[in-house]
Length: 173
Image (cartoon, rainbow, N blue to C red; front, side, top):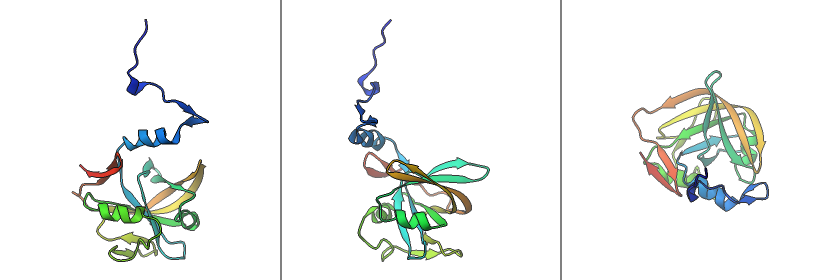
């Protein structure tokens, strides 16, 4: 018996050691993801970047991971920082996500509002919540690094809708 496979479920064309980069991006544009801004300070001033790669890894101990490209301006700082903060963005914070996704600007200049936690980590004001992290491991993964970190403190603003990213645009629930 032959089963017809719809074209949307057909295997993707091979490319070198996987699918073509454009096809890879196309597939993941259709996968909705929460939007966060990761901030840190390795002693040279605050840095931050927008990410959709945050994942909870373990409950005991409480571990999360996020990915960062090795060609980004934030990578050298994240590589040296012992701690970081994941800032969860609310549905109304699209402009903040755009600011921290923009290269070549001072992302912490006005109108960005931020402060430092007692350990010196930069945290964004008005976010839906945050996690303070201590880096445990950095794992090479192609042109990125996966940062695995222990959650050592957290704040959550109950009742706020999260900012989501899907098909190249920001959305809310």
